[in-house]
Length: 417
Image: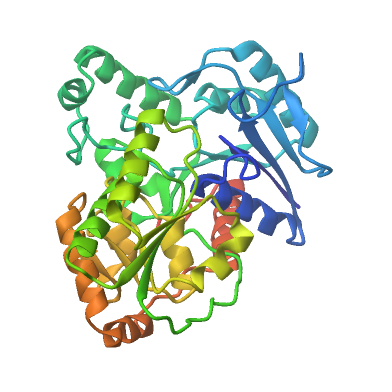
């Protein structure tokens, strides 16, 4: 019997982000596997739920193997919990009660690097795994590896980070890197869902042999039927935030509409925790794009197949590197080709002419050009659908993780790619 504790910076019932969903899917698959026991702990803060006085651990519905861990203030620069006493006591109680063989961290935001040391102290024999879902350890600018001017950052350095965040001296950036790398030595193995992300962390200083590349997997689902419709429809899915590029998509839609193109764009997603200025920018861009654009709002995961029946193309206009976007995998599962930039984990999943088309990141005019190409003939759509790759299944991803856990528990070197 292998016992695995999953620690995530959120829970998909409260924050339906890609990391939360991927981590929770893996937990559910493991919970159902014979010979496995799993517990999922998602962090929660006043942004998500009202706290109960003195209660760091909270139940989530009637489930006995899922809970919420209340966290306090968080230092995003140092990836550190700043209210450690109650947090450490609650997490220690979970560790001593469940006694996992493996503690699998999914992100360190809200959790804090100190939790890795806490696991090592409370359960010295437990193996520690950390999935690297973004570039948070490398980049103090919200883990985006994107400069304030919008330029993509290819490799961090103290001077480059100081130029991006000038209020922080370059010496502090250098100290941050040394501290984070020292803390991460306590992690037994890292998981990267893409080769691109692995390579960024190797360039930053992690040893390649310590990082296993395991693709995110999806639960089984029947593809959404492709319906005939009067106009070709593009669909944006996911949380709405500046780095997701929705403004690029809306600017491209405005250009197409001005040229008299016959198309539709459906925007699906919520804007949780976004500043009012960004919300106002999006509202203005939707209005400027005209009736071709429909703002659909937030959606639940079980609504996705029905929503996919109304679109022909997935549109992923992110203006940062991304890692392994869940929305691309979902589009593939539902047999929809994807338009995305030729950068990062997006280009790794979508090859030009093999399941999708590329455009220059952040370039609305180039996106409009590619959208015109998609509008030119349905023959292109049919050809690309035939080339769509099959995303990894959740069962395949689970097997890779179980192999990794088993190798660690046998004190063997796990396969790194």
